[in-house]
Amino acid sequence: MDDNILDQKWSAGTLLRFAFPTIAMMIFMGLYTIVDTIFVAQFVNTDALSAINIVCPILNVTVGLGTMLAAGGNAIVARKMGAGDHTGAKEDFTLLILTGAVIGFLILLGGIIWIDKIIYALGASELLFPYCKDYLMVLFLFIPANILQTLFSNLFVTAGKPGLGCGLSALAGAANIILDYIFIVPCGLGIRGAALGTGCGFLIPAVAGLAYFARSQRALSFTRPKLKWAVIGESCFNGSSEMVGQLATAVTTFLFNRTMMNLLGEDGVAAITIIIYSQFLLNTLYIGYSIGVAPIIGFNYGSGNAIQQKRVFTISIRFIMAASALVFAVSMFGGPYIVLLFADDASEVYQIAANGFRIFSYSFLFCGLNNFTSAMFTALSNGRISAVLSFLRTFGLLAGGILLLPSIWDVTGIWLAVPAAEGIMFGVSIICLIRYKIWMPRK
Image (cartoon, rainbow, N blue to C red; front, top):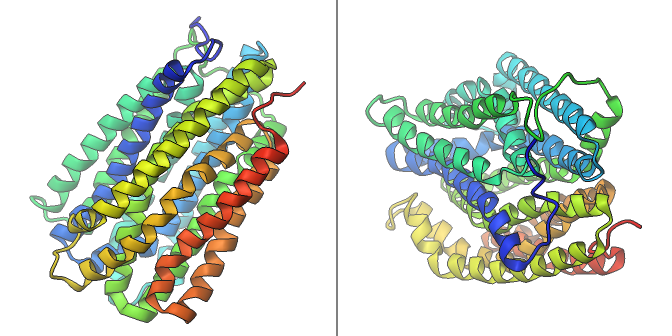
């Protein structure tokens, strides 16, 4: 059986080396998420780009379900591994994978049956409807693979193999980029080609994960599962902050699209699409770090190692603050160049998005700590606090800002909504870290 890599003395160097593959994995995921929009913008048109953001809430929900099971289940599996219950960890792990697969097939079936109603409910105009349907019909076929690859990407870390998850994500990202170009340009499939390339990218980590965990001699592997509703329920509850976050993102994306459509039409929706996808890529640095260290936090919590828990927390805070400053600088000074990947500098879409980046960039000063705080409460099996923080940050404050600020400052209010929400949550996160002392394990 593999040695448990989570059970060691952590220093800044070893912790960052352990988290680095997960950071790289998230960056690769961000790259092949954003590549769809780049190819569509460059080789189809900005209406197709707008259509991707119209149907984006469906992906938010799907990723949210997978991340909920992965993050919540990670805490359970890591805790049992830390307590020495390897059989129980394997049973729960297998049950979570089966649950994710079933959910994926149910979404696939329902999506194909009600696809027209779903697209109109998301606010597609008659102009955007054909693009939305072409993209979403193909993507629904790969929903089960999307959920499985989300689960495996997280659980490779718990299994002590973050490098494998990173490598698979890199392979998936490279395949997605290559296939996007082939399907969109030489094959002439347009927006359907973008969806097909993305779906093939989902398949690579999903199939590789199934093959890897099928080997029974590993520390974490498939076994005969036991149907434990309590485990599924605890995973969903403990990871609910991640699900709440994705649901909130789905709702706020809908609100962004609707508001921009009313203010600036399809060009406005294309501009907000550029900003949203760029935000996801830029956030991957500290999202990846938070995911990477979460199993260590959960393991030390289960084993009661106060010294290691405090050391990991201190190093993490320093890294998050440095990363936030770096991402802010990249966004502030590199924003116009990022927009150029999507739109010509003479276009209306470019002018709207480039102006928005200058205001939007300030959100990156705050969201690193906010992401980390929510992830740590999840790792400590405190799903209630994590869910409240995530809901307040990604929905309560942000949705309020989207609805209120444009009525005061017009389009500028749209760009101010995210920095305002993140800034308020930064203060709330600090209060929660001090109040609950999450750097201390249970006694």
